[in-house]
Image 1 (cartoon, helix red, strand yellow):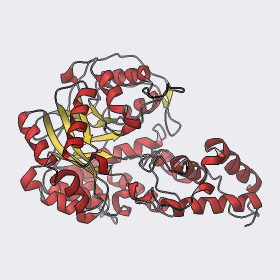
Image 2: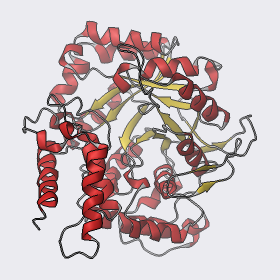
Image 3: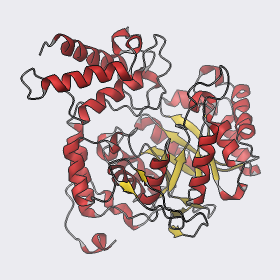
Image 4: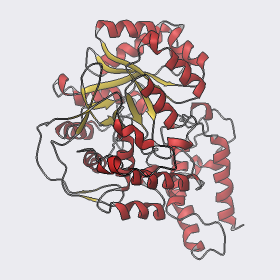
Length: 463
């Protein structure tokens, strides 16, 4: 914190660092018992993990309930999967989930975020099984009323979804209940939650103690955001979940600075989603990665994004979908304890963000909301491969490039390996059934056609 207090140099870019000084929550550090073993593993960004502390997790205080919530929250949308699940059975590897949950709790993580729609509808059940093996007071469960589909808009269907969540999570109360992914339009919000009486019902459930905190997650337009915030005096939102990371601080629309500022004005605690932008901030282009590594060579590239997202004092917890143990370990180290981003580091990250916007990356976070495609296209995997080749330099644009043959082969061979031919971008017919589901507002058919045109140029060597 010395950098923040002593460095009076004016910041040219939008002043993220001002949020270091106050907000809705206070940091509280407590000890949680657990194994003291050393873990050796490979983390994102090429850093070797040598020790994962069990008693240094940073906690934030919920100002309404006085709950101490770990700054690292476990996002349960990307649990490890079984290789060959039987048809109609759970696709999640329950033993692996149990191991990850046990490890997370032993190292101070106590917030777990799931939804009825995650992982083909199985996430809540696997999360419930893993958590119910531990004392209920040792963790906080967040889930959502995910009534996206018109078939679930009715009060009856929405009520069934809510009661199923309690059953699947093996609990008689929800710590953090969200209205899921609002923002498409005011009319959509009112259809899903107001006209069917579900919001009034959830408020009554909060009064009865079966919901401890009531909030919402946001993907959408400024108009909807402002409208739902205007309802705060009536419904008293306990928290709001927003997308926040260093590229989105000013390049998202509406940008993360605006979203956070409006919540802080109302003293509403904030839950952060997509701190890594679907993993892209763990795999930034090499020349940008080197700038970060030169500042903190001992830490992973991903740790920069997590430290950034956790720096504002109004942030209650930062969600991460940690499929693998090495990701969990690396993120625990980032927050055990949190070393806030300094002014100079913030300047560096704003420069990195600006340069990243100049790369032709598809802003996909692999959330899977666009799936399944009615024509079988694997949309997220196509975008992942395309972005990966750009960030790794396997993106030839001219036959005269020095490494043209090598990078051409890497792109084409890698494409066929990561996306089966029948599921590649060439099969898109432009029906556009996917775009309106995309939280990032990607024009998916246009992006798929752009990728397909690029692939055809590579195959025919027409540059």
